Length: 203
Length: 203
Length: 203
Image 1 (cartoon, each protein chain N blue to C red):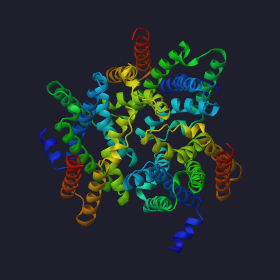
Image 2: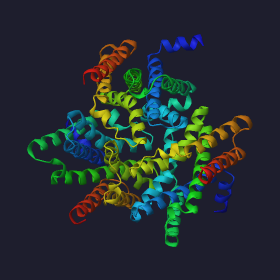
Image 3: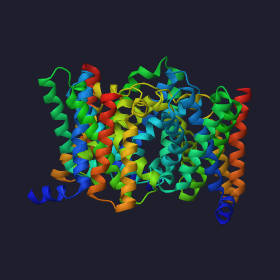
């Protein structure tokens, strides 16, 4: 257990991926709670929001999705869903509560970074790095919107996907200039979450 | 021919996959007939409903989709489309006829089992087995709904995907306890089709 | 540079793929301009329309999408987006201008051919060749429609996907009879663009 925790803390991908899974499962489940789905529906929307971006990333780079092979992913996803249900018991409407809005920005930043790390490791083009980072970050929410028959295009028009593009570009530039690693990951996440929270506050 | 038939009958995946292809092509084509599509549209919706779940399963486990490499798949898909057209010539509205409703439950069960078999062979996690079984079962119908601009979410809320989750869980438990094989496959299919028909009758 | 150009001109896939990328990025961007998106939205819809069909083809045959690994793809996609913006500055409504309508037919034909070439090289079934050619040709436009929350099914009902099916079948027949190559590619593209323009003119 201690060893596991230690290896996660030294691995930027594992940190970012774990944070993103909890945050996006919470956000997706909160959205389903507002739609008054039953517990099965809440769980499905939460897990879809958490898993589809990373699964698409893995398929694009030719891997079996982590969410299907690692029990850690489903555990973290269920933590996020449980947090949303717990929030719902305490708060009136978890969907637009600041906790959910901040979770969404954190998830966006964490998954942008996780996607950029995998893309740079795989050795795709600069555009490929930005594209995979953005797909990892936006794919889950977009797919949940499609399932719910909403247009996911608000993710493009609402300065949401743009934050992932900025973060992914930051990671790629730093990886080229100084090498991939924890510093590039931290700055990528900071740019993404910073621009997103700025857009939410002043956009 | 005899050899082929014999090998299919001894292979639970081949049986389940064949049954699912015919059943879901029939269901998809019947849906397109109700929408008054032309024959090309009927064929496309039928084949999409039959193929997309299994193709997604294959992509997730890193294989080229069977539907693209095996002529058996397209043959069975066309059998299902032809059955729907034949039913339409005999019956008023094939879409909600008991034959179509039962076909849908049978297809759901058969594809849940086919997906669970492939997932256990591939060696994914327990969650991965249930997820792939459910995606195999629900993916084709959901994708057809997205093409037709309907919300596929009724598949989650209407005790439809839940039956595949129960069947996939059954298969995984039996595979762990007694080993994968025909018995696990038969029970997985029975649980899925039984819970689905119960839901249609009493839900 | 000269060597690069020469190798492209001798490679039917490279020609068809390049033409399709510029044409479909133009068509997608023109559609986004009509929706009054900002420049980021126009670029996303243009690139999605240009890239998603080929990326799906590559995932289905087990490759990392070219659009993620080759800088040529993004360059050609940006040329198409820029052409749409330039057209918009000159013309009132680039979306239904003859240039856009013809570009769409040319893109359809070029991507049908590119998909058929890859499918025959991969060694899928005859149905697989037609299916991959059609997915390559129609996938980008269909995905853009899903993002914009429109039904992509008009692509099936409006004698659009049918043209790709005819072209893909032509390529497969010629590849079996005389071998894959430039002649099969040219005739596949001619059948697709011819039937499509005929449908637009007289349909």
